[in-house]
Image (cartoon, rainbow, N blue to C red; front, side, top):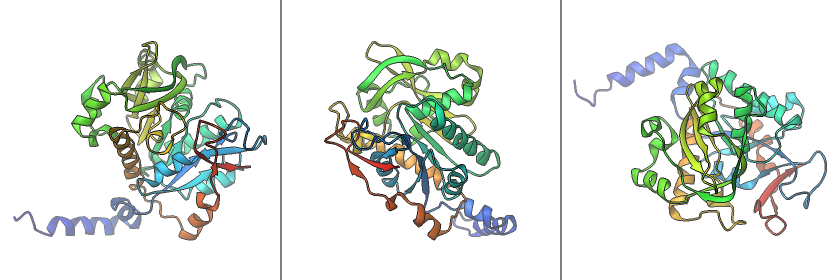
Length: 320
């Protein structure tokens, strides 16, 4: 039979018709994905913009990171009522946990609820990806291990670093599978990614913790300023969950700190990560009402320029 025969496609269409509209939607990549980004307590500028106790923020770089791959953002304000949070989660096709510093209280409780939502969706057979960065990875590790003291200290603040690949075979099916081999090589020899953290998890700790080692596979490690090695990228074994200890969004969208890499290679790393995350969100069968999405998009808020008052972020969205 000719390879151009329409029979296989006809069979697929028949199967989709039998399976119903949800299966048909899931089989077709979604062209209008929406990502929920959880806000972090504070104003992103040490109280120099807004110091209200109910204030939270999302750095605009995370929004632009999502937009750069063809998606839009709905802010998940961490301290809004739980029913409102659930309403917004029903409008999105994936979630992003940002960096930050808060590891307890209402913020941590919200992260736990959203993480469980991610697991429940995927356990029900509904693709729903999560990308957790820096603090996000740390909090996910605490949740999975059920150990709030599992994190270790590292000297990796305001540091550009390499990514080391302990096992190239583990890259199959991961975000790095779409990288050009030359870029993979450059990642291991050149400082193309931005680290900005005091905590993390060593490979030894992750491997020796039964819950973490069964949930994640290690994709990369990185050395801190003292040569101490920590886990820098992981991927879940059974879920569309990727976590980085580093900040891919900064290479394109943040300029406040001189150590942030801005080379063409660093930009390509960021773009590959954004494209991969949003490609996973496109698999979501969720097709929320357009008017509901428009009412909740982050475009209903205006970003605030913080670059003159804080070196952490050039712009932030503030919620209070």
